[in-house]
Amino acid sequence: MLKTILAKPVDMSVGFKDFFDTIGLTGGGLVTKGIAAVIAVIALRMLLQLSNDPKGALRKGSMAIGTLFVAVVLALYGDTLFSTVTNAKG
Picture 1 (cartoon, one colour):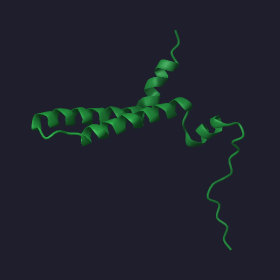
Picture 2: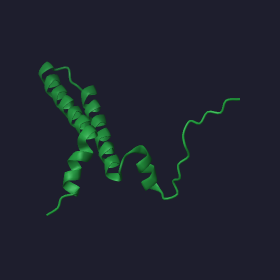
Picture 3: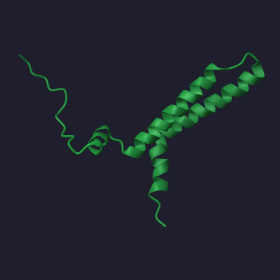
Picture 4: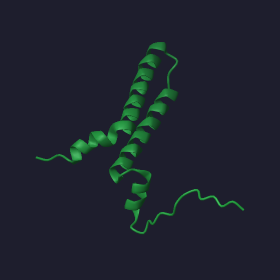
């Protein structure tokens, strides 16, 4: 019988710090991803609620696409952007 190990055992007795280290995020990074996810859901809801008026739909659609763009940028680079604020030395 062939024994396959899918993952090595990880000691997580210290708590959430070990968990965040295993997924490659800090607590701040996880919050940033959560905020980006909420903004993305809001943008998708904005896209689904477009009106039948062509001008209004174009304006609301472009705002929704812009909001979705902000969510994607925040998800990709949010931890870098906010690290300059939290690690400021003065």
